[in-house]
Amino acid sequence: MTTETPSRRVVLIEPRPLYRQMFSMLIEETGGFDLVWRSSGEFAPRELPCDIVLVTAGEGQDITALVEHVRAAHGGVPVVVIADRDHDEVAAEALLAGAEGFLPLTAESADVVRALRAVSAGRSFVADGVPKSGLLRAIVALRERSDARKAIAMLTTREFEVAGHFVQGRRPAEIGTQLGLSRRTVEAHIASIYRKIGVRRRVDALVTLSRHGIAA
Image (cartoon, rainbow, N blue to C red; front, side, top):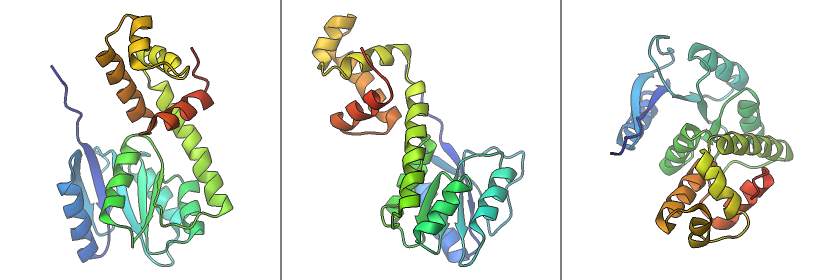
């Protein structure tokens, strides 16, 4: 019997009615997310549980204060900021304040969905269109290393065993022989590892796992 993953509960804070409606429709139409609160600026009641807050920042708004207030009001849940500005300094300010994701208002709908999915999986997200200064690259790199460590810590004992053989270059059939598992079971474990560490390609998985001390 399979257990369905519960939908992630999203709070949306957007003062402009048109954008609020647009983001609301996007969240409601995206599988795996439930919009539990939307407002023009008011925080959700403390007794209302949520998993992600999507908040927009207007021109000239203090990003640090906004993120800190939102995190404090919603129990420190992950915050994704959508800002009128796409400057790297603004993105860096948002991440330093504790936001897990950043997008400019000009981002595509697909980027908003990608941000929500990344953050719900425990990873940081900065839209590709945001210029990457040295500071922002450094912040993103630190976040990615931290995210990877957290993800690797979530691997099951069996996934650790599979990962140890995987980084040695062994293929699923070989790993299965070593661990007494079927090839299909090993492939399922590898797919789960990919998902948890946020990669899609074998080479990226090998680099991430090796960099964080996974060895046979």
